[in-house]
Image 1 (cartoon, one colour):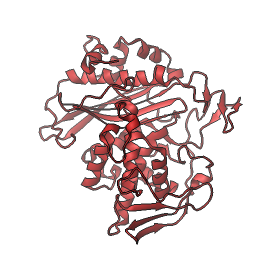
Image 2 (cartoon, one colour):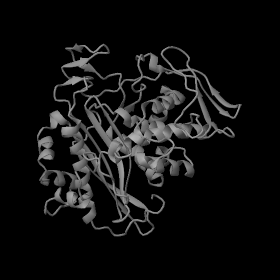
Image 3 (tube, one colour):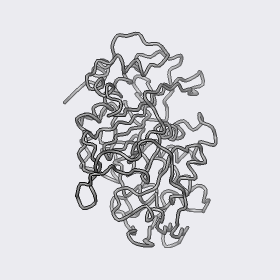
Image 4 (cartoon, rainbow, N blue to C red):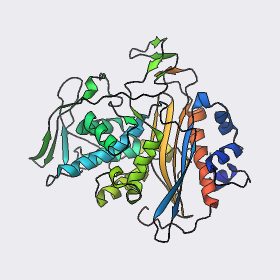
Amino acid sequence: MKYTLLALAVTMCSATAFTQENILRQLLENSADSLLQEVLRRPEQYQLQVIYTQIDRDVDNRPSFTSFLHNVDPNLYFYPASTVKMPAAFLALEKLNELRILGLDKNANMQTGAGRPPQTAVSRDTSAEDGLPSIAHYIKKIFLVSDNDAYNRLYEFLGQEYLNRKLHGKGYGNLRILHRLSAGGFDVEGNRYTNPVSFYAGDSLLYHQGEAYSAFPPYLELKEQVRGVAYMDADGGIVPEPFDFRFKNYVSLPDLLDILKAVIFPEAVPAEQRFNLTEEDYRFLRRYMSMLPRESDFPAYPEYRDWDSYVKFFLFGDSKDSIPGHIRIFNKVGDAYGFLTDVAYVVDFKNKVEFLLAANIHVNRNQTYNDGVYEYDEIGLPVLARLGRMVYAYELGRKRAYVPDLTGLE
């Protein structure tokens, strides 16, 4: 379905005059979109959470932020799926910088060993230009197509305890990142152990990290960590019992947005919440967070060459049409167990529009987990896409004291 983005976006907003009290609530309540209204009428079923953050610049282009929330509950469990890859990518670069080893950088040859079953080793990466795995290449794959194995290798480099304690130490305390993704054979204890990892420059060893064990306490007091009426087990059988998420990953929506903000706008967040990154690290991350699969040669993804929205849910998630060149979305999405999440910084270079948006929705009508029967295409993706267009339309008409200078983001 071909469409004009602006025309579709404008239809999402009524002619209502909005006040500053809670613009997001007013936008949602006044939307003429029947699907959005259906989701809003069933808050217990869909558990839609939204954070919309306006960005205003001063005369020196310094940003300030005003956030509006809908139904946000940091203590209500949802499965964050692939969004956990974002902080893992940021921390992997930080760890390299803090090791302070000459020659050890994100492009160094990263060799992953196997300490114990079911761990697996990696020595080659045929999608890399030089055929070798590296932190940089894993990060590219994480943001281009949300590659699970790429995240798992960063998880193994970081280690469960380091990963969590570092994020908690920065003030992102409403989270736990406890396991690999889509990696068979790992139980709760197995995910505490992480592989030995070595980095090389040619044949010279730069750094070796042995197998590590995490003693990080996973407990968070969250609501609805045991959910549903049934789940599918590893053998494909349906177990007629609620599914237990208490040892699954979790990151609250506010923490996800704050983590993104710390990399997009590091100068605007407290120093203790920032990541220890170089200017080159920031440029690298922003480039690949916004890059589309068709724009990458190494790694190359011909299967996604005509699917710009594969990991861009806001504005475009309900279509496979090309994303206009003047719009860039710096984001990370997640989808699993019927939970859909996107956390994004959206920029329109032509119209000088920018905003932050984060949302999560739960689409699992049969309340059975791990069976693959979820309403992503019928409800989840259309809602997130229309939500993005609704906010975008409002932003197009919003008055700003100063036009943002977006130099360096294109």
